[in-house]
Length: 350
Image 1 (cartoon, helix red, strand yellow):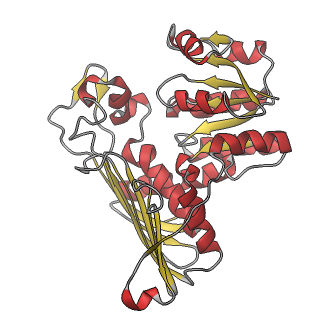
Image 2 (cartoon, helix red, strand yellow; image 1 turned 180 degrees about the vertical axis):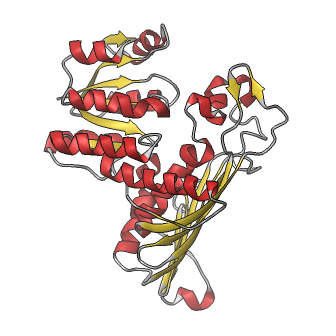
Image 3 (cartoon, helix red, strand yellow; image 1 turned 90 degrees about the horizontal axis):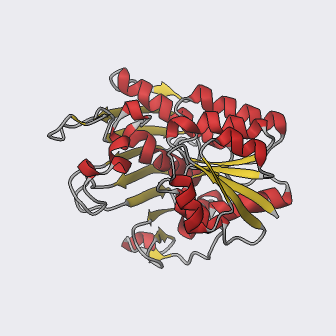
């Protein structure tokens, strides 16, 4: 039985609690949050035996095998390093850290201690994502030439997620002093992982970041200075060229993640906002002449929580790791450097 604790009991923590609480072979034994009373309420909701407000105290007292870190971005590195030094396996929310240096330290510490790690790149949970990566790896599209990806939200102009000006859970994502890397690091990180998982590693990129006028510059402690739109041109190691873009201003899109991949023998269109069986479409073979697209069956796959538990039980590293998270962190850091340099091309040094 894998004994797991959750650190950070905010918005995404509910998913972690539901999944780890239902997976055969895992058991939630504790949770922790620095906000007074929040961990206790979370523990009561999810029937978790123990609640703490100090992670070090929890790790020193509880008998654990692993932790799942769901704290704010700036806390990922210190909490993960603390857990690793307690010889615990660690799953961490994305982005892995707020700097490439910190992400590399996390990966190195895990390697040194021979501990298993995972990064919750949640869009890998979708069967269509796994199928798309499989098709490209098998050569179903031939030589990959062109890629186009997007992650679009609209909560700065819509109230479908609630009124952002009244929600600290949304406002902190617009504030660098609260640890936010803006749209780039919050949802662009998913786009970079998705594109590189399906197509392959990125070797160089150029990026533009923009913070638009929202009619108000700050509310209370939140100063709205983080980027809210990003556009990148990327060059993959396999020679393909691509564009990746993300924004919180995309009217009509609640949470649309999409990727188009074109090769010399076919193309695929992945749109995670569409229900199955239309989530993944492909055009190849005889369909190319008529430009016709057909749906691709996508069997169920384990989600990231299942993969993490399985990796611990089998003592084998799963699909994502801190090394992979550090590679995606390198894309984020290159994007920031490029934007600050006026859109200069940057070589990725993962």
